[in-house]
Image (cartoon, rainbow, N blue to C red; front, side, top):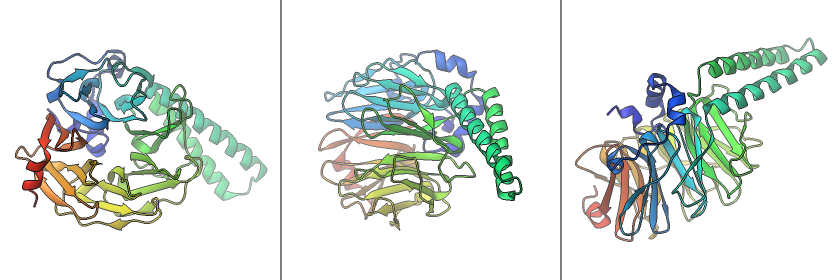
Length: 374
């Protein structure tokens, strides 16, 4: 199977050629995810632990629930396309996002899902936003006709209008790559070409946030909210964006290096980890204001992770690599024999973890991992 389907959320540069070559999007958006006894062995892209169970998303709209007794149950999902991220704000309310700009929602713990948004809707939101901005700048230039900067801004806005129109004609091919909710009402989704969406009513309606300092429309791969109300977004080109008012205004972006970031992870002590391409690994202890590089024993892409109940941290990466740290700062590596990429990790129990990736789900004893750390 083409590696492009592994994780568009965390391997974005690879995923777009798949999206461009995909079968007609309306079929995928209207066709339910097929039931399959092999779903647990098909590519899985994201995992979240909810109490004593796990929820996983992946290829063909698959959403799987693993119970404490180890049984897998496939959820009812209305779309048949790659899902890239999942987030439950409590044990009942959850959202998943994926290719073609799809957002699906569950209010029964993940058993049944309904579509809230897709790329067609997003195209309309972006077009409306671009038109509003162009109209505002037209009026502004009428009041200041000699202002070259305003004229340039209007030219850029008109280009954005034309670009939005072209995207609309091209269909709903707008991959969403991550989703996070502060509570059952307020949430955000990020994706390709600088896409940032927000909702204040649990996803019944979404709006496009265009205020991010991202003129080159770099891909936004991950979004995370903090306990102090800070909202962080990170992605292509080592960019980290920070807002103190739920995305209404953004501080100047921070560039931590050339490597793209794929995931932000909040630890229990308030520290944040940013991980990404080429083994990029950074930490912040001041809500994302400043960042320090952490030593990584392997220079492979790191896609996701989880802090375990004992405070240790596991990160999942390319080439079958799992990074382990008992303090969130110093990491050692374990590498599976298969060398298939791991895209996420979840805790099953005090003695077992779940790894997900291109070959599906694997349950691993922690002691086995720790015995082979290097």
